[in-house]
Length: 377
Ligand code: SF4
Image (cartoon, protein in one colour):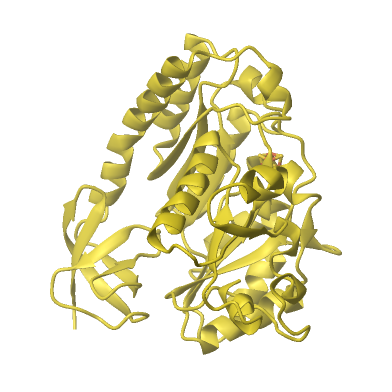
């Protein structure tokens, strides 16, 4: 978007890309705009993203906002007054890792979700297009590709599923590894699990949008998996790739959640021992079915979110401690720190590296969930 704004003569525009996933995310978007307006009076603020698309008038009324661009049009040159041929860079440049959006929108109807309303039906970018974008990323010096999408597991092109896309990317010379962002446990293609066993280049990290540990809660959310399926999937991938770092998304305090149902989410954490845990305190999103269900008091939602985070903490620390003494292939995204194959942060104790450098380091100590390592020459 920055590149398109510059091509359209709006180099001084401040762009705020809003998120609607929770009420908190929306509030952060509004804060970012107010802060930008205070810090840079007179500069035009252009707002886009899911939250702005859901209620454009409210966002247009915020201080300093010159325009609201609908989310679906934010990568179109015309939206920025740029010439028709101006193509946005396929991947975010200037980072050691390339975040490659290969899927947009969603065809499901989870009762809490407003993203689907903002983003429209599922669309996948073509395999050839994704491969070309990854090639461009490698040419920029980016060695890791992170595949992202609203419903990434649903990526399809004809008879080809996500495992075909990953396989095609892993064949590219110069690419160190491919990482997958959050996946819906109901839709992970079985061939992908085989790939974790066969291909070192597929990063040993699996992030599951598990959302809850109780079957009835998952039904009320209209998710398409049961807790048992999420557990079987995580264990299946762990069996294929024993060094797997598991991530979980969980929603705390969904409407009607009882103490026993909340305990089932705590139990899910204990069973799956995630290295990464993202807890979303439930907040009603206007226009969703869950917003009409009997809500829990906000204080109880916050308390349950804190309890889930506390349950996850020892597992995150244990996942880091389990790497002590191991050799890790680190991609440096800052001079002092980088990311390991599992997605853990590693800080170099023996000096700086160039951004984008790839090196094996031995883990000598662990500070919280951060590894401290040294080069081995
Ligand atoms: S799978 Fe559910 S939560 Fe995810 S985008 Fe689709 S409707 Fe929303």
